[in-house]
Image (cartoon, rainbow, N blue to C red; front, side, top):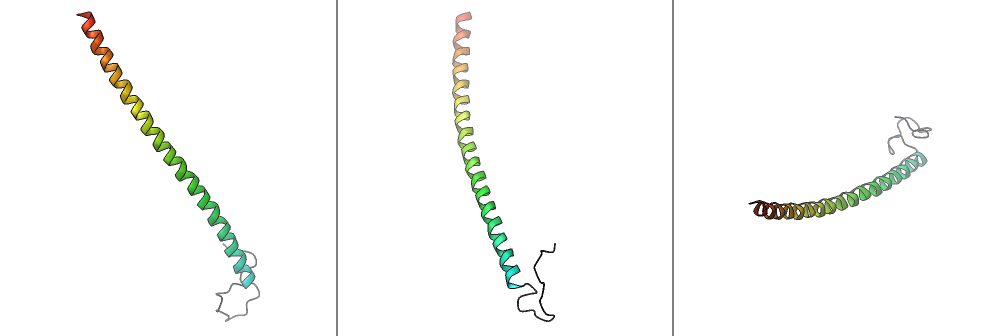
Length: 83
């Protein structure tokens, strides 16, 4: 992919900056920094959300285990009443 402004006006054989003009390279670097920061914030948000989901799953599993225990107790109690 060719970016506008990169490599324009560079004399042939000038390999010190790999064919990029200083202004084009700077613009590319600034765009990379902006995109990197955007990605970093998105990853942080996803990490935080996944941690919250993990806590919620643990809490729901605990409640389900308690309900299972209560149902077992009720089933045992009802079984004794029917005898």
